[in-house]
Amino acid sequence: MADIKEMIQMKKRHFDVETDGFYGAYWKCKTGSDCAMIAMIGDDPEDYLARTSVKWLHKLGVNVMTMSPGKKDYGHHNYPLERIEKAINWLKMNSNQKIGIVGASTTGTLALTAVSYFEDITLTIGLTPSDFIWQGFMQGKKDGCKEWPIDGESLFSYKGEPLPYMPFCYKHPDYWHVIEKETKRTGDMINSRKLFDDSEAVHAITEEMIKIEKIYGTLLLIGAEDDVLWDTAKYIRRMKQRMKEHPHTCRLEYVIYEHGTHFVFPESMLRTMLPVGSGIFMKLAFQAARNIRYHTRYNLIFDS
Image 1 (cartoon, rainbow, N blue to C red):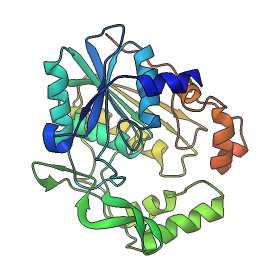
Image 2: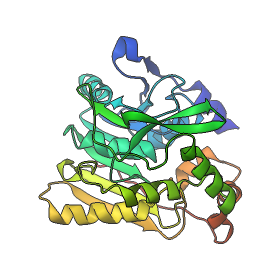
Image 3: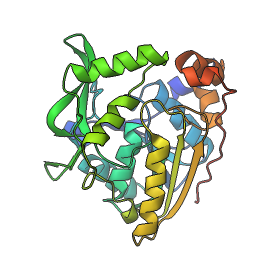
């Protein structure tokens, strides 16, 4: 309860797309720091997950800029990379000498994509990311579906143009029906792996691949073999191979757990997020976690 009260009382500066060019919040570390992390964890830059990431990163001694697509926008479609560029520029103008970025799931993919464009970021952490960009999607309620693909839109855009993307082979409403059927079959909280595997099988991925060889500094990729949202382990191995095939300057580190499903957050962050017990949540949410002793443990060291 004390941790929750502390998170509610944390001070921040808010940013809006209309006035500042991006949607986010800046949380200055009390101990003072000239390093900052852009954290894209949670649906809103001030929700519980975002505040949890702030508390976790503050313990590591860095300032934090939390970001998300937009107010009450829970989809990912043609997100302008310029918003991250504007956030980077603001951080630089406000005494942050070193800047990193961390994202999980779709925002992990966003983090990798953005850093391949902007060299000011020198620490990139991708938690269960993909190595390619896919079709944009929206979440909400439509024809009995909670999520649907958007025709002609990518996950991300730059300079007003959608970035090349892998289209889904299932259209609305079949897109959601596939997820729904697999989720029911496996007993997971949500299972979309078939959606991604089937789409990649019918659409060869070429231009959609993220050019991770253009990333500067340190790149840390983390995933699990039993991820049921998509095949993160395969994607990370492909990124490792891509590094071997392309000249690059960044240092790649990666961890692929046998178990961990789609939520391979640091144990210290999970304890802050779920003080009752992360293992209990995982066993309730994912079938694979019911059959193994769940743990996700790794340490992150920030080079300041």
